[in-house]
Length: 524
Image (cartoon, rainbow, N blue to C red; front, side):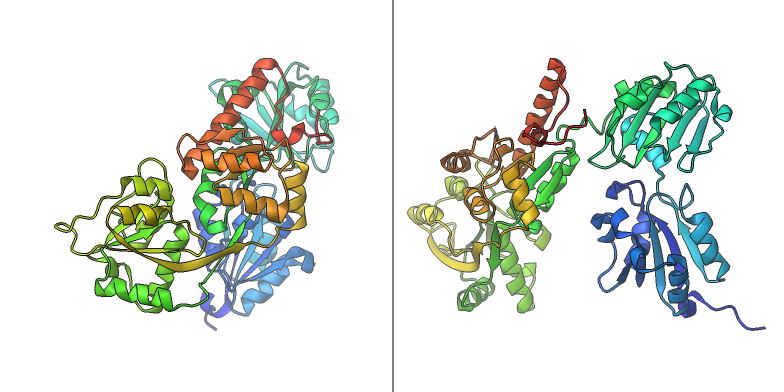
């Protein structure tokens, strides 16, 4: 009898569900399987880039559009010894691929596994603020109406909650059928489209008016019928976020914008990161080489970091020379603000001085200590900075008795223009808000992409940035109470919450700023 082939000899196939749409709902198991896959077979149009980002570098991704038999391809590649993931939307076992593709994979005799994903059947109502059961309603019945031919008489009972999928284009037929078999036309009903995404929309109605009230809603959509729909008034949490669905332009590099974008997502926004500058090495490396040598040999008392780019530049030089954070032993380190301080901590360096107020070179200069020859053995300060840095900080430190060495750690040049769709959205009002974190982001964004549309909310980090924005003809709507990117995002969220509350109080439809421009799509 021949031995059973091992997974290492034959490979393995994993049938993995992505969940209902929100990339944050991908399971830990799914992320781990994607990270070690050799081949991922997926419908790219149905799965977000954020989920595919879990696929390791070097792995192959094949779109299902390139094959007539994705399960067969998975089997062939696994037989060649590869770890294969067949990635499918939702949950493979709930209105998914498990009965079809899963059966073919299982029939091959290869090792295989199923990694469930959160099903839209439960996740979408949860995001809509509608529990499927409560103390009085303990039965849930799921109906797939996509192929028609549903025996509606089986669902006439008033006590069961109905979750209906595949009926986006037959809402009137579904409602009439349920009324015809005995469900009262006043039965609460809700429809949620694009559930768990930042484009989610929920309309609450009853069976009599559901078709009219949901006209124009986008697919995929899910219908919930039953008294549990009434919970939404108290439990709606997702669509009520202060910036829900707002498309927010963040004119910073992806590395700089990571924390800011994450904060915006927590407020319900969809951040779009557009670099306005490109960071490049200095034209001649000798200055930086001498500076790093001076750090190691004890030439400096202080090192000042005025940006995360400066931290990155020093860190890269350290890597070139085989150094690490221990080279800062005995040095005092200053950071211009919270983000720069965070970059230093990630490097393994705890800054000694960070301004509590204005987070800028001016703010750092205000809290800088005077040189004391009894306490400070060395009066020299290293400032690794951009080639276009201002002299304000150096002038202040010099007045306080310090000797400054200003070293070009990196160069900043205007970034290339963003893709045409981004430029059109900026000028045409496709963005709901834009965050300006410095005067240079105002100048550079307008230089590479044009002036934001007048419906776009303009949010700025401080008075100087506001002044620059106004000089360029922009109306400033939001300014942070303190000059930090976190405070700026918080200020925009407060603005969004007040705007939403005002629309509700006035009885107006809830519309994002981008929906206020002429020609914007309105569902009703």
